[in-house]
Image (cartoon, rainbow, N blue to C red):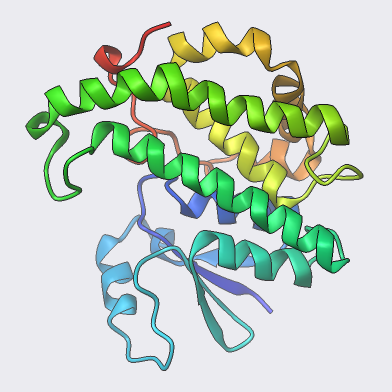
Length: 235
């Protein structure tokens, strides 16, 4: 079966966490809104399709007759069905927990440049964004990264200990996004995170991931969750 992934075209966004799992696992899928050119209207039209369990917003995956929404929920499904997470209950729950913590940080990254309202442009909330960015750089980035560094120091090369899981792929993408959005700050804190830096490199070297990153399927950062505004970055 070929899964159907729906996400807004033109940006990696939250859909990228799902793409990385599908790519790493060699799982057949269609990136529906990107077929025949990026088409924003296709997503809107599919979202309006009457369903018993409709998604609130992308990303969502159509698989096995189900419509599965929310990034962590999709990954929980893929992890169990395609061996992208431990098979025991405790292991699956642990990887899911790590994924939810990654999602928490992703939300905080987004709120740096949209601290007041999603409906407002960044330019409409720049003073508030500057204050938010200062706290995020000084307090939140070190706190989250220290947490994941501590896990890897205890468990080994991967969050689940024995082999990579979808949460490791997501952590890789989070690090990539942070380096794009806050290069000065990440350069300053990187010396305290050798395990995270090692994970970033080992995920990049996974054969399916390396091939994906070199392909035109990998979309560039820009006007999405991870945005680079020089005035919001500092060491």
